[in-house]
Image (cartoon, rainbow, N blue to C red):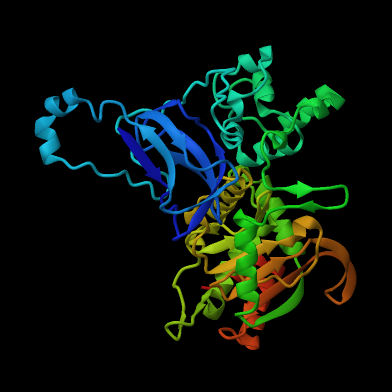
Amino acid sequence: MIEEFHLPDLGEGLAEAEVVQWLVAPGDTVTLNQTLAEVETAKAVVELPSPFDGVVSALHAGAGETVAVGAPLIAFDVAGADKPGAATSDAASSTTEEKTPPNLVGYGAAPAKGGRPTRRVRRAGRVDTGADTAVLEAAPHDVIPETPAAMRVGERPRSTPPVRAYAKRSGVDIVLIAAEVGDRVITREDVDAYLERVGGQADAVEPRESIVSAGTSSDDRETRIPIRGVRKHTAAAMVQSAFTAPHVTTFHTVDVTATMDLIASLRDDRALAEHRIGPLVIVAKAVCLALSRTPGLNSRWDEAAGEIVQPHYVDLGIAAATERGLIVPNIRDADRMTLPQLADALRALTETARSGKTSPAELAGGTFSITNIGVFGIDAGTPILPPGQSGILAVGAVRRMPWEHKGEIALRQVMTLSLSFDHRVVDGAEGARFVKDVADILEEPARAMLLR
């Protein structure tokens, strides 16, 4: 019996998703919850689990193609579903139970049995000559050259989407790297090490673009890159924000020497060393404290309802630059966290974003955001508001420079804060008061004791 699996709603009402890569091919036997493919929405890369035990009969979209939510994605031949004996043996149960489709919103159906999902062992060296080129690109590990190194790889190499993309751009088949590093997760450093070992031979590896075009065209004078995925979503969101909310940006440079001394002392404390408390964590804590005095910065403008909505919590967005583009995952209820908890949440958020595994749920919402431009050596900027938020703070680089201190000129560590806010919700006085509150905490961390 043929069962069709339609692309589910992966969260936040997203209307479509792009197939990044297929991990199965027609004729493969799959088990319940086995990963079928990686798809990229406007917010994240998501792994799709199988809702059936059966044999893949057809793929309805190739790698690089965009599929609408609800459209057929893959077909299965579910064994035994249409056999005469099956209806006889299970007659009683079939009359009382209706077949319900699995709930794949988010990360898929619940397993029917305990234990970890089984990973399918690939049949090395198999080439399905009946498949079109899109399918060959979708299952690259089935069409690799029959080299001894590749034959030792029994299953799909373990790596993150950014690493696979980096290997692809470098003209390296990641299967060959897996044969050398074994069963552990392949990193970007492994790709660099492989390139260093093979030297100029990497150019001899046929890039997968020669098997099927990924939609990127180029010549000697220019390169054309399709606008899709996170980049497409970010562009639309920034245009909407820039031409909907009247942006105002205010700047303030502050002496953060006391904050840097505090960070050094916390790092020397063995009980806190593992939490990795740095300048961004202190700024995040200061922002949460300052928002309690200026709730307008933690509000949103509801045009349809004609209301300004003020949440009684802080879901703190942290802008993260990834290989897939800029994303802003959120730390839920950041205002209720202690400094060590905030540091741990920030580290986990950053690691997840860099691995390309941030889920749509982690990107949804957000009441105020921080962007750390200081990591790029930049002092100040005019950040654009994430849609639905009324404030975003850009944190500049910490620099040692001559500064007036206690009536004298001394070398101090200073930082520039850049606050952009929605002038429909926040007036200039409230924006200035917020920046000043954050600056006062950074200049004298003990002032945090004065804020509720």
